[in-house]
Length: 461
Image (cartoon, rainbow, N blue to C red; front, side):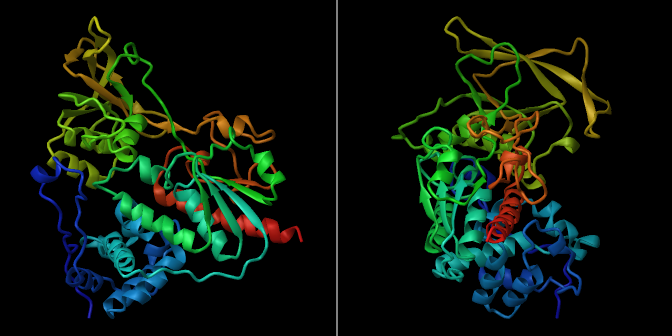
């Protein structure tokens, strides 16, 4: 019998005034009792719209149905057939705009907590050492994957299951891409990422670290070494800046640098090899998920933090949950404000920042109302740190070292709907092709490219 409660089963989490001083995971996850209760809110629809909303087409009613019966292993098998990184997606996917956004329970109440149930099942499998290692026999074909972020890991896992010998080349000293360097520990523990990566290794995926493709090896050299296809999933790690006076001052960070120091190098630990400036008052420029992550990290590092965004709250691109958590943790939102200059002292360090108030005018090309400066409204904000989180673009290294590989004016490698690029045998997906987007969309692209690579290689026989 379905539970017709209009509200999701709440997930336990750390209290705001406790968690804003540590890097432990905020959400504690469902207990078995809470997971079972929430699973019974699913109506097991005959035509599940939720599946249509999932970029990797997880069989949602099927895996939730197993939870209802108490069959956790069955739930994990169903989930992991479609999703290579379920413990990650259960934590960081924007379910509210994807699977849960299509849930019929959301018409007259809250949708089923699909993401929370996905996390529960994936965590249960990790805790009980359950891994889906079903794969086809080795087919003798080799494929190279550049980048070990969500697109690369998904593509590698899909190909390994089909019997391919897959090598992942990762530029950093740890695998995971943005999952490791970009998303904070309190949202996605790195131990979870490591366990998900280890599951791919168990499938036979070879992950080579400290391999900067375009420097150590070129794509042409990968083909010379016997790889029959190459997937580029190198992400979008090149930060953008405001291009205002003062961005070269000491204390100005790109969100990429700041988060990498915090997440990958653990700058919050006293003996870290890469300490970070412990500011008293920080401004984070931007309103997306990366801005929320940077602001919440700075808060945990002891700063009084202000998010400065040129549009209003309704236009914030960040997930509502992340905005809610940031507010609970004491982060200030200076909305309809835009920086115009960062001011320094005689030693080249930040002293303050000039900001002008904005109002929303007519819609721009994206359909959003354009922010317009209010004449005479400029004021000075006292800060000692500025973190710029206004977007990223793909690093040009791979496209500049690969003849015949076309890119658009934003620096993104151009592909067709299958992930194929202008260069034969080279496929691309995720942020390297689209610019910065979500983890699950990158995974969907990796999955699509894996099927295309399979078709490409088998079609050559």
